[in-house]
Image (cartoon, rainbow, N blue to C red; front, side):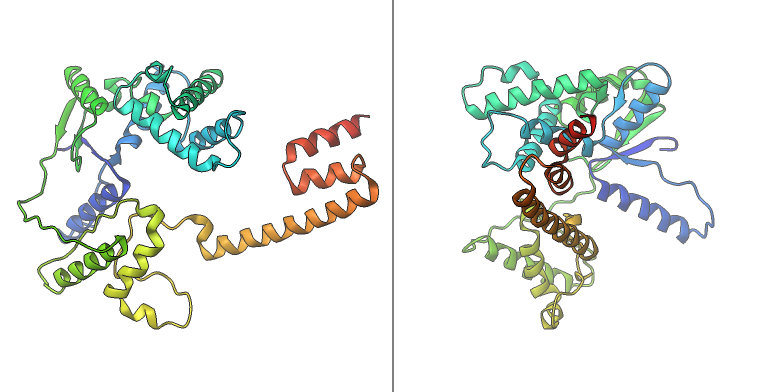
Length: 335
């Protein structure tokens, strides 16, 4: 396996493999060792794209996932046919995920043209606009880059680790790269036969409680080092799941007099949003309070000076959407 890049489906598994490698090197008494080359699939594609670009085999600029999501949100917000009652951020996130899935399953963009439902027609419209943005600016996102990278950028080879199954595009790329002389391995699964049982619960909350008690019983056996609980839609239910797990696995957290840092008795694979971190939340609250003060002053200025006054243009540009305010200020200064 020397020289091969290990590829995982998630960052969590990549971090775990690096940690195991470091622990093994320490156990062997090594003081210096080579860092294990392990990346996620998307990180592999980005690395290959950058190598191809440096070698002159590809052109264009890499569009990070965060920037791509902002672009999708802009497209959704600017769609005149979208109801203002919908959440643009949530719709944009779903559209970005669907765009990626279309490429993973080798579905052509024109396959959704002429769809019968309004949702399909809206998504097709957003895809066309997204493709126009990519073409105009020379951007390449992770979904599109998969089909463009050259096999030589993966040399000398890769080992796929932790994949339950490859999606159609991944399977096709693995075969294509292997045919081009790149060594492609798939690590055997470390799973072992087990037993499956079913338990009926009253509701979703009862399922989490039952899973927590099941995990606690297994953890009482010292031979069990780690236990995993798979929760659908964990990102949305994160707080509820955390509270119910803590109630069983770390009951002392219920005795605190107020909010405390999350327990270290278990890990949640869904990170808490940055806006809910205490320091960031306080900063956002401060900014929001300042914005409300500016809005109050703005309204008073409009009542005193009139809607076409200089004070309106200046206040609007600071307290609200800056584009209109900036345009008006520019007109007043130029005049």
